[in-house]
Image 1 (spheres, rainbow, N blue to C red):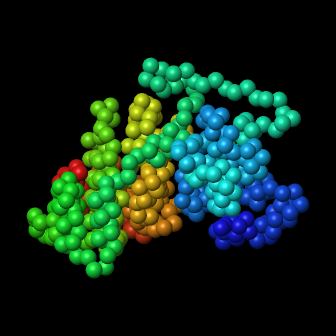
Image 2 (image 1 turned 60 degrees about the vertical axis):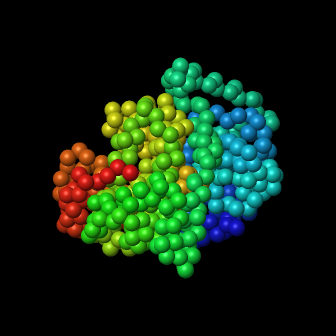
Image 3 (image 1 turned 90 degrees about the horizontal axis):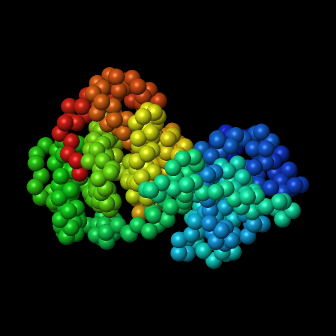
Length: 443
């Protein structure tokens, strides 16, 4: 359980506040009550944006914006107003026995436990800004003495079901969370592969026997093993031999990634071929960069490259018409995709992909790379691993527009710094990737 004092200590450890400032805030808390973090912010010692970034690093929950969402009354009635106001939280959706709750501080395990006991439900926390949560609480749980506030009307619908203009007030994030929770589990064969992989007595032959039971996975593993991204010295025709070359853990993560991508239905209104091409190019670039950075022995780099944008598939699956408009806006305005998504939906494809990674229990380093591939400096599990995926993503995009290695390397000094790569080393790695990029196969 994370105590309030512990959160204060963590903030001090990160250099965000001083011990004296925390002690002053604790004195205020003893006299007047309230949340320690809120007091630090009110005293001007802690910036809310900085605190959100801190929580993004230290809590394994997505960061969303709830300012423009309409929440159903039956969901709100699950949590007493006094509890919502006291702990700065807001229920936003329920699916079965799972209640999704927006919180200012999802590290507060005591509050999560209390909320679970009060509602009789399992709690899924999501991270929100204090201002958004407080505004929503004032709106949905007004003080008894206050005049009731008029509920804003829902935006008019178009024939396709999306708002025609103004604020996106449909279910938004709750819709996405519900869609993820409703997704079927990954094929049982992956669990069997993982079990064999984790058995120290297992061999490549043992895993090959399991994988061969799913011809689709077996063919993908062979395809990857023979791809330009790995560059093995000779063609591999036997699945056991491919596993021996790749390694047990790498084989499992490749099987996991290709099966995860296959779980989403295709729709002609979304360019899946372009999506898969970029994913494969990112994975190939990641392998080259990892080798240059000395990370080639780390399993999961290739899989993380394949999966880095999987949140986009969730958004397409949940909000096809709406996301098509967002994609068009990104192309028209030239802004980074995550910025437009956060502005329009309140959540980015990176956070949505991370939610999916949690749901399907991806390895921690892959989940973190998905979440922070646009902000690798926030990665905590493995900054270099995430930095490789972040740079590979940029490289794949820029190479597709015809930029040469020197131009690409000079564009991302911050990413090179995170990876500890010199400009010359980066150029050499990028030239190696560009030489192979025409041979990259779409998985």
